[in-house]
Structures are given as C-alpha cells and as structure tokens.
Length: 141
Figure 1 (cartoon, rainbow, N blue to C red):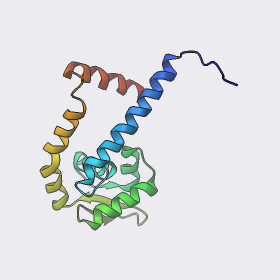
Figure 2: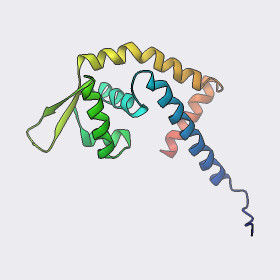
Figure 3: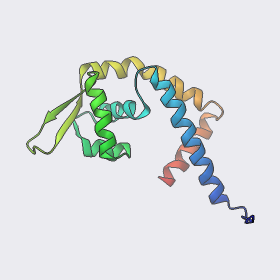
Figure 4: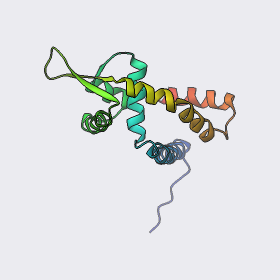
C-alpha cells in the first residue's frame, strides 16, 4: 500500500541539505586523504589555528560539533604525525591541545589548495549567491 505524501517545502529543503552535506563531506574526505587526513582532522587544525591558544578537547569537540570520543581519535592521529601536542593543565583531568610548528607549517602549506578546492566546489554559485547562502545557513545554525 502506497502512502500519498504531500509536497512540503521544509521536508524537501531538509532532504536536499542532508544530501548536499553528505556529498560535500565524502568529497572533502577524498581530497584530504591526499594529506593522510579526514575533514575532521583538517577542521581541528583550523580550529586550533583560529583560536590562537591551546584548547581543551571539550572545547574542540564543541566547536567541531563532534563527540569527545571522536575528537580523541582525531587528536591521537594529529599528535602521532606531529601536528598537535597535548599539554598538562592545573586540572589533571584536562589536557590542552596546541598546534606544533609542524602543524602551523602544514596549514600554511595547504591553505591555498584547500581554499581553491572550496572555490571549485562552489563555482556553480556567484559570490553574491554564496554570501546569501552563507547567511541563510547561518540563520539555520
């Protein structure tokens, strides 16, 4: 038996956002695989770079919108390849994560390529349309 589902623009929009998000995530992971990373690895580096100071794992997971357990694995990998360092803190339960010089160099070396990749992915929209979309997505967030 088939259920007739009426057209609902909110439902259609949500579906398209989920499809687009999944496609962007998969394509970006393929791109970052060239650097032995995932999107989350690169985003953690960008979060730490933007913060300008060491951050706790809890704060990184909050900014990344990811679980602490997932962030632990991401940070383990970044520490293993020498891009971040875990520092002790007065509160022994907290470890502050900071970029190493190697991590800063990696961001500097890959930033242009990452931005060019984003430009390529967004090339079907004009800069004006990108600004509008960014604003609309910000409202949803």
